[in-house]
Image (cartoon, rainbow over all chains, first blue to last red; front, top):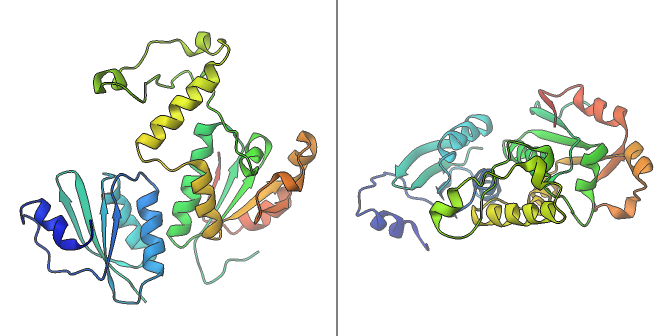
Length: 94
Length: 172
């Protein structure tokens, strides 16, 4: 998966979001705690206010990403469930 | 050792060295570090070999009567089938522990679970303090060279000095 567009097309354009990512992280197939750990690593490499789109197939990610966002202060803009995929948009905080 | 920048802190004791029990401390530690917490794990008794360069953690079906016996390969129905093998009995078969370990590693890999080595590396990279118990080293005859680089060595006081200011503390 090279960019965000493919992910949308895969679901027939059903997923609508106003956000456009600066960085894409695909954690498909990974189990806890890897999606959170990789998200943190990616966020650390980004600039403040940049948006990360993270794709996960771990159902635990929905609650985990919300908890991670509350603890770290990086804003969880959107959390989308699309069949077996979970898509998150996170804005890096200062 | 007081906390820096008001960060939350977690202190873990890892006391068990089987493959399955090696996961909780490394999973919790790597996640807590990803949540901006300061983390230390004190490896003592059977937990200490988890710091060795060459990890040899195995599963022990005999001491885990609730462990499901499932195949990591074959048709889905077969994979989901819980083989009614009494662990206490099978555990006495030569090679059963090795076979169970190999099956569990295959299952983990297939399901996208990180290896203990990978989680340990993530912990080191995210500044989790890994403390090896010196008393256990002496009792079991381990040398500093047996362990991976980047760890600290110490005793109960070393751990407690970190743990005294912790928000979360667990014995695993």
